[in-house]
Image (cartoon, rainbow, N blue to C red; front, side, top):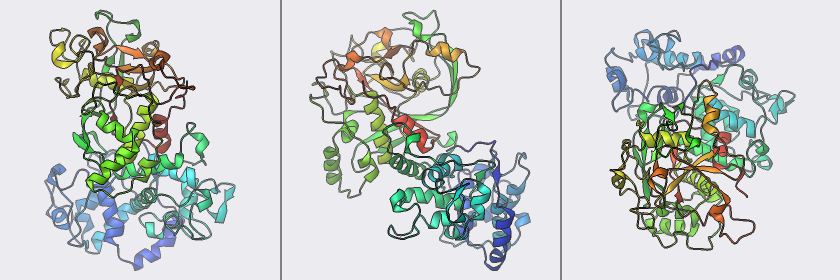
Length: 578
C-alpha cells in the first residue's frame, strides 16, 4: 500500500503523553513490543537481509551494529551516535531523513528508539526482523472503525464517554481508559476489546452488531497501534453501513478479505515488484504474474492507422500506476475451481490440505451451466470462456480471498498499456502482418477453435496471447466517446469508466474467431445482448454468455491496495442483470 507523501500526522495528545510518562519512566523499553514493529514496518523494506540499501542491513542486532557505507547504525547506550536514531529526527525536507518519502516517524516513535538505545539496545539474539506491511490509516484502519465502531462512538453519541471519530478524542479515551496508546496495542482498548471471547459482555463490536471481528482485521488494528497509530491531521470519521457500497455487497466479507490482502502484501514500492508464480491454495494449480512498470502512453490509434475505427480516438496521453498482470489468460484449470466448489474440495483432499478457506467459500459462485461450457474445444491448459463480466469479477474476488492478493480485471487503459508494452505500432511486434502467426491465434490459423495458452511468442513485456486466442474482458463500461471525454481533461491518471448499465462492457485483444484488424493493440469491442441470445433462462443468466465462445479474461494485481469499499467497487458493479 502507498502512503501519501503529503499527509501530516497527529502525534500523541499532551494529556496522553503526561498520563503515560510516569509508567514509561518506570518500565524499560520492550524490544519485541515497541521497537520491533517500528523497524519492521518502517526500515526493513530498504534495509533487510537481501540487497540492503547503502549496504546497511538491520535485520539482526549484529548487522545493525556492523553498519553500512555511512557507518554503524547502532551504538548501544549512545543514541546521538546511532544513525538508526539520528536520521529519524532530521527535518522532514532533509534528503537523508529516514524513513524517506514524506512518511517520517512520529515523535513518540523516535522517543522509543532513543530510550531503547540509551538503555543498551537490548535485542534478543534469536530475534531476526522480517519486513511487515506498513499499515495505512486511510486505506486499512479507517474502514474498520467507520463500519464497526464510529456509529456508537462519535460526537453526540459517545457511548462510555468514548469518541473514535477524531484523533484527539480517540487517543484521550473514555470511561474505561485509553482506547489507543501508540506503540502499545496490549494497552489499547480499541484492540484488546476486539479479541475478547465471543460471549464476553465487553467484546467490541458486540455480537449483535457484527462482532467478533475476523482475526485478520484485529491484526490490522494491532499492527497499526504498534507501528505508532498514525492518524492524518484533521481527519474526522463518519459511520458507514452496508448501504454505502454497491448493492449486493457483503461488506463484512469484503472487509475480512481486505484484511487478509493487507497481511499478505508486503510490497510497497515499484522496485519490490518481481515476477512470481501464484499457487492456488489447496491445489497444485498455479499461474504466473508479471510486473508491469508505471508509465505513460498514447491510448488509442493515430488516424493514419489502417483499419482504424472512430472509437479509437482521439489519442490521449494516459498515466498508469504499476501493477502485475497474468502472463496468460485464465484457464479452465483455474476457473473451474471457482465454478465448481466440489472440484476445489476434491483437489484439496488429494493434496492433503486440510486448511479451511471460509472467506473464499463465502464468495458467491456461479450457478451450474446448462451446457458444457468449453463447447468441445478442450479444457486442460485452454482459456476459460463465455463468462459474463460479473462472473469474471466474482472470480477475482474469490481468487483474492483464496490467495490474499488483490486481483481484479484490468481497466481498458491498463490493458492497452500492457499490450503495447512500450510500442506505438499497430501490433506489439510492429505494423506488418508477416509475424502475425508467430504471436497470435486468429481466424486463419486457429482451426476454428481456441488453443492452449502460452504457445505463441509473448509481447515485449512477456505477455502471451495478448493478441488473439480469446478476446479479454476489461472492467470498463464501453463508450464510443471514451477517448473524446478523456481528451477534455488536463491530466488522465489511471482512467476507469465504471459500469452503470448491463451493456455494453469493454473487451480487448481479438480472438481465434477474428481477422487481424480486430487483433490490433488499439481495437475496441463492446458487449451486447446477442452474446447470450441462446440462453433459455428467464431472466437471462448473470454468469454465462453462451454465444460468446471467443471471450475470456486475464487478471491484474495493482501494487496499491484500496480500502474495502474500493475493492467492492471492482468486484461488484451492481448492473449484472439484463
